[in-house]
Length: 193
Image 1 (tube, rainbow, N blue to C red):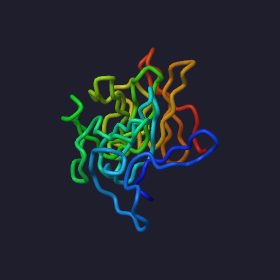
Image 2: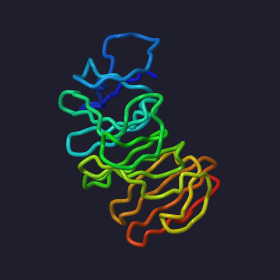
Image 3: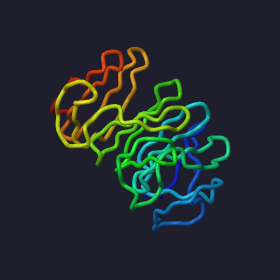
């Protein structure tokens, strides 16, 4: 990958928003916060757009980054950005750790949900940047239970249903799970996709 954040703007034009904007292939991943051309990413795998901000699952840096859509200015939103900083620590934005954040989605009100693939968990980032584990025990499994006891195996995609306030989670082997915040339960809705 190019380790860049790209945007499709009006008329279908693609432009680089943040990351190494000058180098040509081969690209190498690294870490740096800063203006559009100064910021560096390491295998960014997914983005969520909310309120003029692009949130990035910077997977190999093991953190979530915040990129201003207007100018590409990039900061760390949550997690300790470093290739050797894996973990499942909840807490304030700069004191948290992710195992491998691969997918991210917004609930439309500023709350972000992250698939922490190697942590076998779903993490939530509130508007202040505080991170909590909302579902998953940290051990691989497929138990459909309440959010405290439910287990996942390498969740790799997330989608938020705004109409029903449900979080959908995709795992390898085509398993789709739904987390219903109103009931606090995780249920398998489809297998073998």
